Length: 359
Image (cartoon, rainbow, N blue to C red; front, side):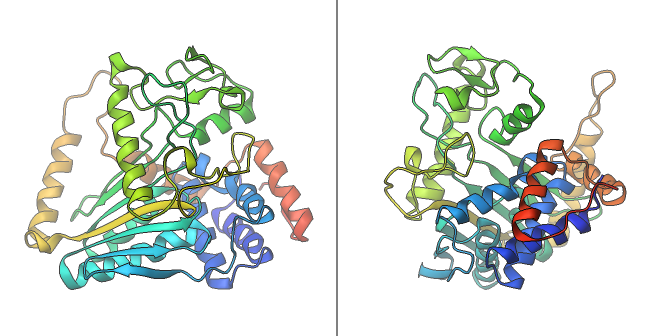
């Protein structure tokens, strides 16, 4: 087990070593380790080496000039200057919240960025100001639309965070695919197969090969196949891609550059700039008094928690599993897979940073 504080300190040191300024290194490390704390291991420190590979390949600017290139009172387009998405996205959300404070809601589309970690972190920033937060991002084309053999979309997650009063907030954070690609990476590290319904092979047949993307296969949209609603997952992924890429001037569809995964790094000639995100903040009191809304959210949450459950199960609210995991891991530490530890040791050796053995 590793304490979250120690992993954050190590991660921050690595970002400093590639040239990030102290404030950005701290923010990037905080976002990354928040994923491990919340149990989203696929998007936590296991991805640290991937960001370094982006830097090595000239696709990551450690000191970006993040700026607004177009705006109205309620909207903006932000250029991330090839910066860490872990840094670009929170700064874009700050802009969205500033606009929401002035006119009720703020919407920011981002271009020229990179992978931004877990979507939920950025959406939850809005909770601090009694706002509803929205976050989306497009990603490298690993996903085959319904009936397609070609990979056209990314796992393209959506996150929405809604404040409550006495109850914890509602936080929905999910990929538009059956699972995020990071889950395949975990299976690959463990040498395990994937469940049916997660992916198809190069010929369009369902497969349990967790390495199928590396041999021409693709991930399946949420729903897995047409009979189970994959066209809906395809639709969600397409919406995210359009809002994140087409709206901002970032790359979209099959042109989104890869994030050091699936065994490839090079990006084909694009149609825009980098990876795209879309973030929004809505003031609750732009619709009704915040206290009244949050009181009703408490009632909503309690009603769903009180729903009769099948034997041995419990009805959960989106965000419950992550919040409970964060409480546990904050106290007991974070367990890392051996391949991740080896990767961190390699980074430590390269940059002359000590990496302690687990406690």
